[in-house]
Length: 398
Image (cartoon, one colour):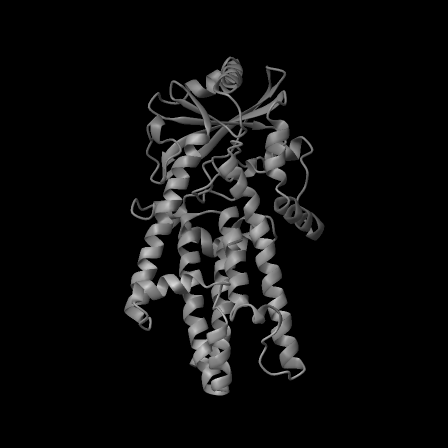
């Protein structure tokens, strides 16, 4: 592909690739899930199976739990806002550019282009950050940082072509207009780092490495902070995790209610003491529990809500964007109708892990059975297949 064609197709290719990975959670509810995971799942499983790369499949922010922590709640709300704002910016830019081409108006220098030189890349970057906050795998963070640097390279190439074509006019426009952000804080910082010299490939590679390390460090700190906000209790070889914000005493009572039932106790006792079980406690109607366990058989026998068809998919997308799972967790925190999903923590090689590593990077949790609680008593216990709805790919631990 020629440089000219790459300059046109590159931004779209970069964003579409990032979008395909970052929209994993949305693809999950479409008819294309099987095709998507036929390509993507082996990559995740390959990374998960190796200690050096297992961290790439982990999540650095909560996705299926709520601690009501103000910082984490703020980031949760920020994700869809940034995604929406970024898409609006990009669509406005696309309208400006393609309408100018259609009506032969020449170079676009009005609207958003009268504020910055590359608002389309700003829009894609903002939308990408929103997706990253919503589906925060480490691998998506790596791709996001790489995408930002790719956009910088493409923008510079675009400016060289524009300068060759429009000469002094474009040079004057570029001098008077910031590149990506009003005030150009990044440009001023880059000028201080480079001493005002042109940015070469080696300098750009060094800056990419520094940015990636800093981003991953911040993400690792966020993961540690997120885990610290979880409500958890330990009973022997069982680690109970509350998906809702609450106190340890309530969680201990709910776990105790489940363990007092003979059917539950029989199933728990069947596992060796050195095998750690993780018990997720959540409202029975929580829509994201399919990321923990495959409940299809239970729902088929008990009138579970179907999710097939275009209308159901669109409705589900709207519910996810409106943060319905978070609202369900908060509304159901004090509900008498709770569910305890028992899973076994293992490495990808099938080896048991100690209780203090039950939610660690590189650990998978395979479903065993669940118990439904109503008014502080067990009303049903049911075995489940050792997978979640989408097989055994790594999913959020919390």
